[in-house]
Image 1 (tube, rainbow, N blue to C red):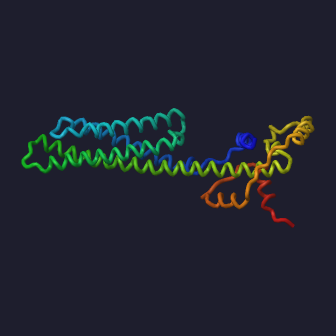
Image 2: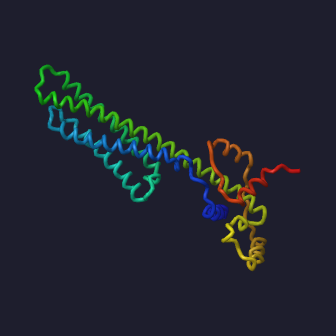
Length: 257
């Protein structure tokens, strides 16, 4: 019953979005990082294709695999953003944590393999011209792979922060809604917090009052100390811009005469 009541309140009063979810600067920075990572992955694909005909092509398939997966993942993210029409609404951050971590680790392994191949070729004595060209492209590929791994690592860390902020936001949202439900239920039920255009007419007040007396809504037991501890751990949050909530908040915090 309590969860049903909270869902009713939640459907009518939406708290502000988490700061990290509506951060336009971060959304722009993330698009720039992912666009750069996509370009680097495409460059790595072309360089790997060129190196596949060189003297040390046994480890190129690993580089090709990592670069191909990076291209597919970044393209899927951009496709999701384009389809939803909002740059802040891509693939869920929880999915990004695992995917970006795998791509970062795979990029590090591919970089290590390519560096070992480059060192092995460079340690040879006299080399033909084609080996010199291969070595030059291989050195460039090592730098591209290292940058690609670093960018996906940064995206992984930021996705982890997003997931943490989202969970924190949901926890505080439930606390505020539960506190509002407790205050309103103690004053006569949940109908007093409905928006004005959805409030019941005067003809239905008697019926609603009788139903409340026969089956009163349960009042959740909430410890004020627990709420203070939870709210003090949050960096910042905003209460809904509603006069009812503001009046309840003011009445709750007003000193007793």
